[in-house]
Length: 153
Image (cartoon, rainbow, N blue to C red; front, side, top):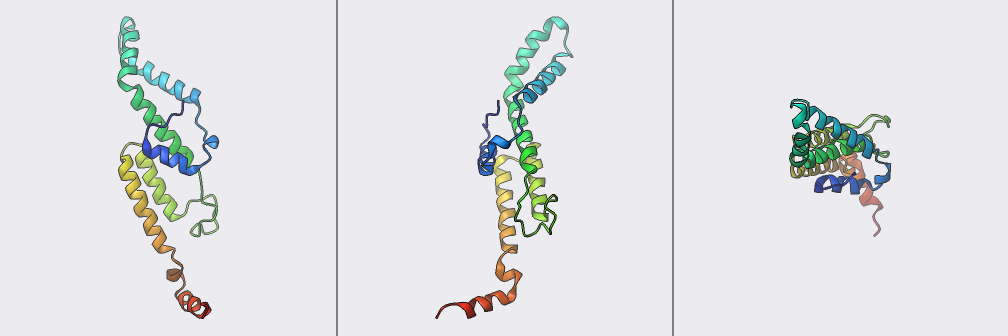
């Protein structure tokens, strides 16, 4: 059932590489969707429920599936940690400050508060800021001088 029709989500999943390790169950999705349909039709008389269920499927099923995919994939991706993160401060289970900001963006995207385009834009800005902070010359002012001294010639 896990069909990615959101280009941002597809990019995110492909970037992860190991989609086999995602814990995205077809049964979980179908049971949650069935619960949503049952909740929707419960407000109508019994003789209308079949027609209302079909109406829900026609009107909401695609958006429901996309939202579920976003939330489920975001939940799984959020569990990942960068094993070699220089900002992790020796805490492999806790996210570094940059990762926390990225998780905030990811939550906003999964909740529908941030479009895919805005998510990508903001994530790239975050990565750009992160890259600037981690430049070796900024971490160690003496490194540039040492590098020049070690240069051949």
